[in-house]
Amino acid sequence: MKSIVVLASGNGSNFEAIVKKFREWKLNVDVKELITDNKDAYVIKRAKKLKVPVGVLDFHGFNSRKEYNATLLSHLERLSPSLIVLAGYMRILPAFIVRRFERKIVNIHPSLLPAFRGLNAIERAYKSGVKYTGITIHYVDEGVDTGEIIEQRCIRIENGESLSHLEKRIHRLEHYYYPRVLRMLLTNHF
Ligand code: GAR
Image (cartoon, rainbow, N blue to C red; front, side, top):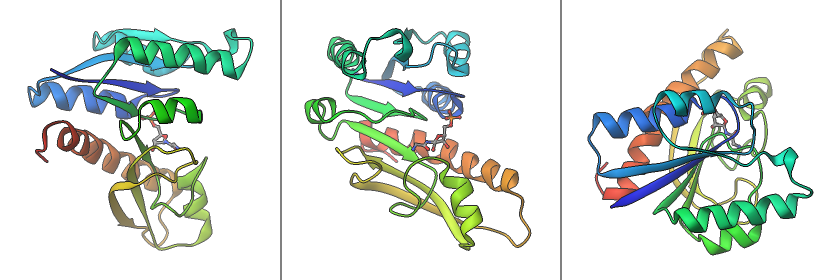
């Protein structure tokens, strides 16, 4: 049976959308675990409610970034999922994890890459004056938001639209497409 693990650091709305859609579709894919680096992340509450096992690797409880990432690697190797899904995971995966799971790690980013890589992408796009922005789903490589693009969807920023309204529309787009793209990668069915 195919399986995924999801890595998330904060709110977890994408994680929840993925779990709910996979269940609704009765997809034969096991969501093995939600892994978080943040012991206070709201995503933990969502996972518990959805009865998905939670792995908390509290970043601040480790002596170094290297120690944290080494633990994360062995945790991922033990779970051995078909795909590692980043959904608002706010740390950069080191090269030794990326290489170990080449083309098995997928990320979602709230802009049309290569535009607005990195943090606060929605707000930076909004303030830049561009008329179109969107979402990108891509494989993770050793750079920051530079991996091979799998899917992109764009939306027009309406005249006079508020940032919070744009954020809502971006998240809606993410929640619609991320589960579908993952399903395609796992089953070849979009
Ligand atoms: C999402 O908008 C995702 O695209 C973004 O974080 C948000 C997480 O929301 N990811 C990045 O910016 C990665 N560079 P969620 O926790 O509610 O799913």
